[in-house]
Image 1 (cartoon, helix red, strand yellow):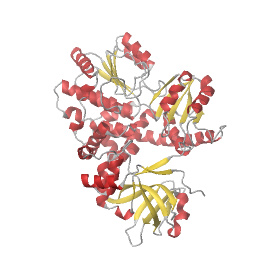
Image 2 (cartoon, one colour):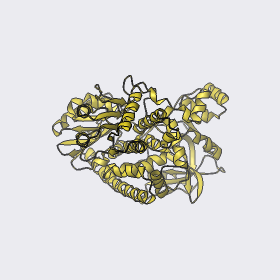
Image 3 (cartoon, one colour):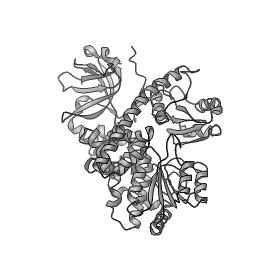
Length: 575
């Protein structure tokens, strides 16, 4: 049995006592929360107040986008001329929420409007040849592409030359040449004009309808009513949870908990038994069900649910999404096992600095998830490919400090197509280039050291667990919503011990449940560690442990209690 930690434990910052004391005095917080504010660079009182109380007034003017007025005028022309408008979006959560948002808003004003989601299996990611051909054949005058298109140079040219005006609303990294679209809304483009660069695709769609409401003199409630969809996209697409994204997520979560749209309400009512949703509930319970439609069948099912205002129809569509998600989970498990076996047989394993795993018949809908699973098992930049017709297609996932998009750019002469961002990307490659690409991808990571390839867990502060009171948790929740760049706070406690009721859980006893104290006589805290079943014998007899954990509310049988979720365990050493 190996219970040694494979993680580095790293404090988020090395903050002086003087600085902590100053923030405590300036902001009237305790030292733990002062340290958390310092970690987030929120030491100015006005900045901290905005962080803790986001409002609609914190949102940027959408007309800061250089092309926004041009876009608004073109849509106004389409409305006045009765043109055929098509909303085109990707098949993942960000894409489907984007389509539901923009289509849901514009259908009030445009009779001849429809939407198009490419088929993952037949068309692949982004704007497809088939999608453009159908738009031309069906007399579409204006197409608004959401969450895709920024690298579709030739297909954009084809659409524009055929008389289909294309507006691209994307948040992915642009290439050297921008597509010759009618207009582009992408804050990552040079001279885009927008001050915040990390919006989700749905977030850009939201800025578009915000601008339209301003232009059409509509009340703010018209665009604000779609904010729950934006929160789902932000959570699921893992964009940085900072600045405008955090404001949008905060306001969107409020709507999700108070008055969600009918489709989202159906998912919440049927599958989530929790009175107060947070971002993790969106990430692990809402997002996967929406995503499953595009992974396993057609993403139009997800869009249909998000647009539905009929309870019976919404129930049927939500049940379909849940079935797709169950099917996806089974494939996820089986393909992860197979891919892990393939990786272990490869020459150079485990010393290679990258993972490139190729299968012949893996389901394309789950290769991204499996790439993430493999990376968790063997912490390396990871690409998973599967055969698709005359090509191999797949997904890339990266580790901290390694830009996977930049690495693929260096190998671009060997790729047929690729796109994405720093930590995740999609790619398409001809079979004859696989061997050369494997070598080039490995070479792109040659600068990675053993330190890079050891995952780390960063923690906010050390706590004595008896300080975790209801009041502490109430203040901790004010830092939410959590996500990239505003992570769920991880804490460290040393020399804790189980009170004698430790047990394993799960059908294979793979999980661990403890009742922890730091000093005898204190109120014990329940701690749960998924995947820590091997520690059971180690913790018996009051063995002292050092732990990393997050703090959450456990809602069970209409009762809410504080629970520690273990991230890592070490045997305590007095030295």
